[in-house]
Every structure is written in C-alpha cells, then in structure tokens.
Amino acid sequence: MEPENQVYADEITLKELILKIQEYWHELWRHWLLIGLIALPFFLYKVYTAYATPVSYPGKLTFMVDEDEGGNFSSVSRVLGQFGFSGGRSGSYNLDKILEISKSRRVVQMALFTKASVDGKLDFIANHIIDYSDLPERWSEDTTGLKDFHFSHENIDAFQMVENRALKSLLGVVLGSEDVPGMYRTSYSEDTGIMTLEFDGRNQDLSIVFLDTLFGSLRDYYVEKSIEKAQTTYHIFQDKTDSLAQALSDAEYSLANFIDRSQNVYSAREGELQRSRLAAKVSRLQLVYGEAMKNLQLSEMSLRNKEPFITLIDSPLPPLSVKSESLIRAGVIGLILGIMIGVTFVLARKIYRDTMNS
Image 1 (tube, one colour):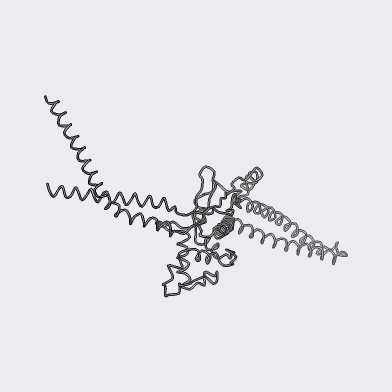
Image 2 (cartoon, helix red, strand yellow):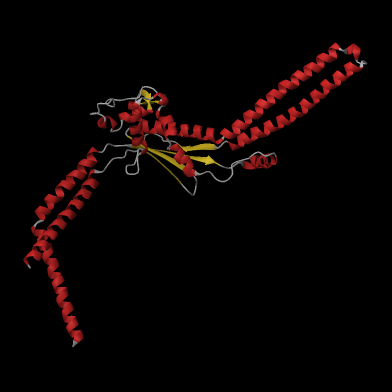
C-alpha cells in the first residue's frame, strides 16, 4: 500500500504545480499593461543610447618582426662569437613587449604630436582626436583653461599644467583604462606572430593617419633601442680606428720626411738608428691599425645583424567600414531586459500577497 500512497501523493503535487503555473500565468496576463509600462523605459533608453552613439571608422594595420637571419648571417654569427661579439638575436621576439611599447606614452606621444591632414586641415593628430571625441563636451564647463583647448606646440617638456592635464585626458581617450576601452587596441596571433594595431576613430582620415604615423614611430623607436648598445660599441671602435689612422699617417710622414732629409748620411750610425726607430713605429702602428680595422668590421656586422626588420603587411585602405549601433538590436535588448524586470516584479508582488494572506 505504501507505493500506491506515494504515487497518489506525487500526482497531487504535480497537479498543484500545474495549477500554480496557471495561476502565475493568469497573473502575468492580467497585468500585461503594467509589465509593458515597466519595460518601456528600458526600451527607450537602449534605443536612445544606440542613436546617440557616434559612428566610428575602425582601421587595422598588421605587421611582423622578421627574425630570420639567413644563412649568411648565421655564418657571421659563428665568426663574431669567436671574437666576443654577439652575432645575432637570441631567442624569439617578445610580441607582448613590442605591443606594450606601441602603447607606451613615449611612442604614442610621438604620433600624437605629428602634423597630418584630416579633412583638408593640417594640425597635430592630437588636436584632430580632440575634435572628433567627447573631450570638448567634457571640457565645455571647465574654468581652468581646458575649454576650447588645443595644443599649440609639441615640446612636451615645456608643457604647463593645463597642457599636461589635457594630454592625460587625451591619452585616456586613446589608450583607455581597465574599465573603459580606448580608441587604440593591439593584438597578435600566436600561430603566425603577426601583430595588429587597431584604431576606432570618428573620422576615416583620422583612423588612417593615426595608425600609419604610430607604426612609423614604433618602428623607429624600437629599431633605435634595439641597436643602441651595438651602435655605441661601433662608434667606439670607429673613433679608435680613426685615431690610429691619423697616428699611422703622421708616423709614415715622419719616416718619409726623415729619409728625404738624410739621404747623404745613411752610413752614419746615428742616422741609421733614427730611421730604424721610425720604421719600427710605422710597423707597429700598421699592425695595430689592421687589428682595429678588423674589430671595426666585425662590430659593423654585429650592428647590422642586430637591427630588427619590422615589416608592414597591410595598412588601412579607404574607404573604411562604418561601425554603428543597431537601433533594432538595442531596442530588442532593452525590451527583453524590461520585460524580465516587469515579470519579476509582478510575480514577486503576487508571492508576497499570497504569503501575507495565508
């Protein structure tokens, strides 16, 4: 008998569940207008937000760093290693490091304070970004000098307080923060090593010139810093070689001049001794100069071998695609969100009333 009683109890529970669902559904249907009124503000807000969001023109630039030294350079590397020189780049390039450098303030500033033409107007890229951003609106009520602000020179070391504040705000718009994404983004493919720079500007020309200029700044800065030590070593050897060349030239001139002046006294012991000393000095300098030239050539090969080859793959090409918020999509999202909140409110109110009346 116990199994039959258990089945009977289960049937009663299922029936109650179905009746309760019907009761809740009837409650929702009876208050559909209230649910609609609750959903309406969410619908309107999402539609207005999508409508007020300005369109942007996302540009993309791809490049790679060539790490293949080739057969000739591999042979050179072994030779340079025998003389204590670093013949090449060990390991692979740190792609994250390169992209972080591209987002560093130094490199971004180099691009921002380069003049470029946007819509026929020649100005700093920084000023173009200000014009096509919400910064003028944010600064419209400012009384400390930011209202209608534009940069007038590129000497950052000479910036006043107002200019530094404007620059920090501009960098925030370009680079973003942990919570708010900026106009400029970077990424790379682990499989191919191809790196991508992206910029969402509100003007097509602005997106293109920013990416092209930033890539040039990144390439120049990275190459300069990569070969800085090797270049310093090369200049040291070059200066030493030049000094030895001058000393050798002076010694050879002294020897030739002595021979011309003492042709009639070769048999004299004192004259022969002086001539031998000058000749020995020339020989020593020739030997040292030869070694210095060898070191200079090896240093030059090391310098060339250390220089990274940053190769542009694709640059942004007009016309760029237009990125805008879809009003239909925004309306649907707002409507769904509002209906969910309205349904939750109606059901919670009924549950509360039933609980209080029981």
